[in-house]
Length: 505
Image (cartoon, rainbow, N blue to C red):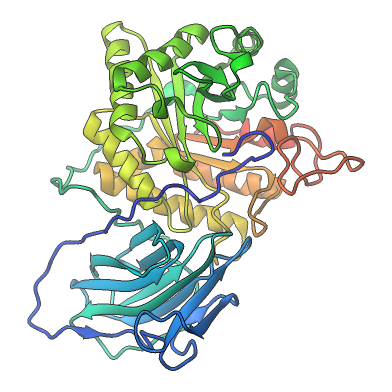
């Protein structure tokens, strides 16, 4: 989620280059590279299925003469795919030499894994993935950059392991929704599958994100009366300096001196609803980056909890805060949860994570694992199922469903949950109207279809960004593509919120 006039996540987060490792299964067969045209030495894209922005160039090769050049722009990640045949239940290692910013190497199919680098500092570096095929005999290898990050180069792609059936590359650009075998920093025992019932999250099933001080906020009582929604995630509290919680990080509007948001909170509760406060967002200084140790950060968060008498908070770590300073951040959450438990108070915590076309990014799964290591627990892991760029599914609804299913599978793997428990802990957050990605559009019909999907899966909550945008744009005033104060589509006020209000899990 982005803040004033910047309303959704840009996937230029500080991503950790981590390797996804499967179970090693020895084989007596010889290692063979089954990639067709692995170094692009044919001088063209033979064997690969690529976006129109991709080409083969000279002068940038890691070895030989040619290399792939992927020109990622505002509407394309410059993806190249190749489907290869493999042996079932066998371990393979995939490598590629890459040069650029936010370059991704992945494999999708029954075995799914991703590795990436935020930058190579204008030199080639090798990305490596080791994975096990499970029961599949075909996998799709993919390379891509990220939106608006410029041209990346890739060369010398290899997939080494026993030869399977004769390779029969097929043209495909559709990533599999299979769960990602997310990278881990340290090896840990496989979790025992949980059959515990999913949390009811205290009845907090359909919170809408709302900026109470920015993007021309509506009167909250009028919004509740018109839409029927009574739960809101109020965004965002940041640091205004010296570990001082403030709305939007504005030193003129610290939490300690606030009365305006207090009025919003009281109005919502007077209507029988409740609020969470969301810490973070895409811009500004998140408290976890500036409050020192875990105890100092916990004290800052607690001061906000005390101010608004909160029973729930949302952690929206984005940009350079994603997967950063995790020992401090999740150490603070563990302290808050322990203190609340000792005092007999409820504290519900949600973690909001941006998505990619194949579910959580590696930095997102790293973050979840860091929280587990710190002993911090989440009622909801909330996925921002927008602004990743429409997958090749062909329509917005199917794209969101694929990404959501992939994320649910990743949660099952990380926590050892059964299906129902994983769905019950997953929050599905979408966005109304235009997003920052031109390929994405959430209409009222999209919301209605995804309401049915959320109901069928019994997700922990069904949410969207943001109430401030739940109105048509004034045609007499210039607006951004994804304006912070209107949806940029034809609608009546609160039409999107009325759909969210129908969700009851």
